[in-house]
Length: 179
Image (cartoon, rainbow, N blue to C red; front, side, top):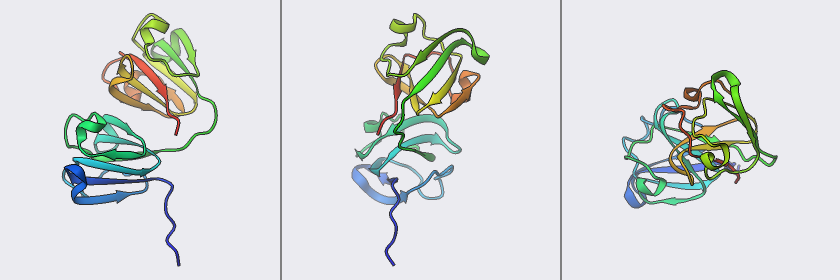
């Protein structure tokens, strides 16, 4: 019987340049520690993935598309620590999100359906305290032009910035996730 191959596949390697012990993953995994002690390179065979510095989808987040990442600096990692990963489903529809200047969806609101390389240029401030993702998957970036810490936003309500894993309400740019 033929083995069915998942649409999503990522391979983690302990050493740089795809060397050393490896672990192949085809689904969300909240704790990768038992499979490898460090991660210095990653090969994304298919799909889009978010990898996290800590277990249970916590800590620094990095979005990876199909491709090769021979060392952690290629995915903008700060160290060789990857402890959980999550598949990002392929989404074919439109994208729509509302951001708010205050917690619990209050204060000034702005609606987005396209990428925004500089939130300040468009919105005149950088602090987002809540948001509602109505359609699609999005990434928030700490700095303009899609740089700095990344935060995955799946469809749903985020009443406070720490709901999406941020330690600060400062957001510089945002981008739709399209495969």
